[in-house]
Image 1 (cartoon, rainbow over the protein chains, first blue to last red):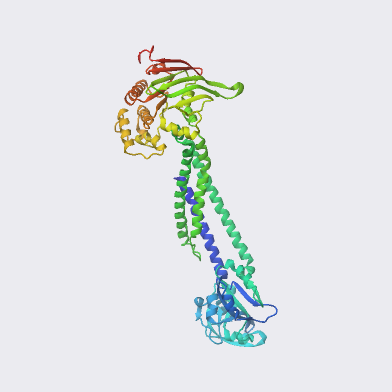
Image 2: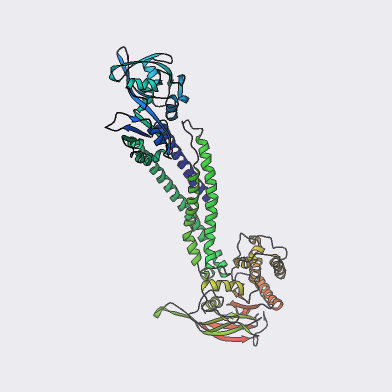
Length: 356
Length: 237
């Protein structure tokens, strides 16, 4: 019974730690790049803009989920002696919402970008004391000044974004930059699997007149952090498995010694070496299956318990991870039975009968 | 009566070179079907070695063992295990019952080892043998709950279950008091007479050997006497 509990704890930890790390990473990646472009097409050194017609071509890529044309400009807000710089992205409200998911993150005012309307972050709003409905004069490139109305204030959950980002309607952006209807600063793209963005980026690099920026190139520290986290998680899980294997092996070894006499007699009565050896394989398989099932239950219980922890994300059980843990658990149990199984298979009944 | 078990010039040598020991020297004899025989010898005479070889638990270094007209000397471990299961019933000094199982489960163990599904016929045979052994109504009792004498009788029943060609018993009453000893031999005799089962009993006790119809005496690895019920005084006399 204790050994089943041992296996269950091992597998439970596998399921929980594995699901925790996977969910944590998914959450981290989602909060980092979930609401921002994964790939950006910029005009190359010889061009001043990218063509909006590229959106169609980019959208044909099967891995691309969203592609929008945007205009990028910087603006400076001056309030007495203080100057605050804003990085402004201009586009249609629908387009911008498809990547930045702003409509659900408005804390003040509403999500809309009509003519000469701007959305600012909550950090900027507080620093500049500018709120929905207020006028916002911005010093734009080429020294012009744009007068915009604050339509809403958003909270993207990251201080840097809330302080620096602003979104402007498309026509005002075009006017500020002097761009034509088909001339844009960038095409912003999201792909299905953020970790597979490089593959798509490499393919898009073939388009003439653009340079491609992949989020993975700009977030190497995050990626190496995630890799280190995965590595350490795998190491913990590996050690847990070794502990489980040693536990099963020692239990079976003791059991094999205890049962030597009985197995010797069964062999004298005609049990073959193969059948005797299989006794411990079966025992290990039963221990393994029972331990794994209990362990999965325990893993789910831990995940459920974690939902009460005061943290900002949910651990989701990972089906593939659970299946792999179960398979490894049973395989480890069977592997642990090899030594007792062999010694039982080779046991000579005479040794037992004469030693009795 | 045909011989069901034949020892043909059996040799058993342990070790090699100067340190080798010759445990059996050119031992030959045959056991007839339905015979009630014993092997007698002092401790270390080679009688248990002989029984192990005849019971296919060990392989001789020379000579042959013929069981039911088949030379079984050269069979591999698996074939010998299967043949043991089918043709030989063992009774040891210690009962070797499995304590976790009931009397009937212990009795049907040889049948289960052979991979056969336990059916109505086996259950009936178990009941019949338990009756014969004077253990009526104990089929579902746990083996642990029986007395020493009862356990040894269950072990005898287990040896009978597969209707073996021969029962080999190695000091089967070594752990029993005199009353139980006599009971067991009377039982052996009844089984021998009622079922026609062949018995070969190894013992160091001349008094016990004298209860059988034939006494084979082994000394220093050699068969020195083979007496058939001629000069032996009656049992207990």
